[in-house]
Image 1 (cartoon, rainbow, N blue to C red):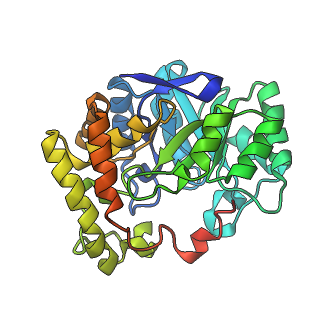
Image 2 (image 1 turned 180 degrees about the vertical axis):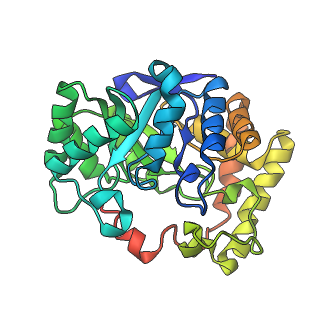
Length: 327
């Protein structure tokens, strides 16, 4: 497995990480505990050393799962988790008060069965707490040896700059993929200037870019995609045009849609580390195949020109979730 460094912090991780949310939260029924542990350990065996979780994934269940699964080789992996919601529940809104950050961190250490959190993200910007106070609290936790690195999720350029001035930010997590390229406008240039790594979540468009989803696909009743405008029946049908375009490129490279979508991300910057999630071992292996795909300058130009012909239909979040994107 190739390795990458997240920004000037030099935090080294596998070129692809594993987003673990879907094992416990978001896409319907949780994966069985033994099956989930097996998948996480399989990822490690295949070379993945970067695992992403959060208190809100459950809440708490996902951190507990990772703590057990990664315990045998804890010192050989990087664990990223997140704070920032009241009682760990997204429906209750944000809570990044310094005292809550400390409480969540100390509880997460126990759930993760570890003495230190490698990368601690603020999950969403809290409009009621100055980012300087957030960064200051994490700085204290780093001094105390409870946290190694500070990260932000879905933060805007000015928030990133203000936080970084108090405590250097190692990584910013944002949605970024061939069907959501908004970070290219302000976020990526700022990260390059500041020496901060980018960790794209939903690099496969919440599964859509794999080509396995169409307007006839039925999601579990608890799957959050049921509430996402981009996944309405009408928009899924319209957005298949993008999948078809990707499919043509994938056939030329003897690859899958997912591999091309991930390889494209990896080719953008050497400090970008996507964290695709999956609950299936064969998809895990498929995703990792993206690391071996070498997209030439001509390939990238063709992909960019092809994607530029298409306008994705539908918002990426529902109105309630969008309110939490406070940039």
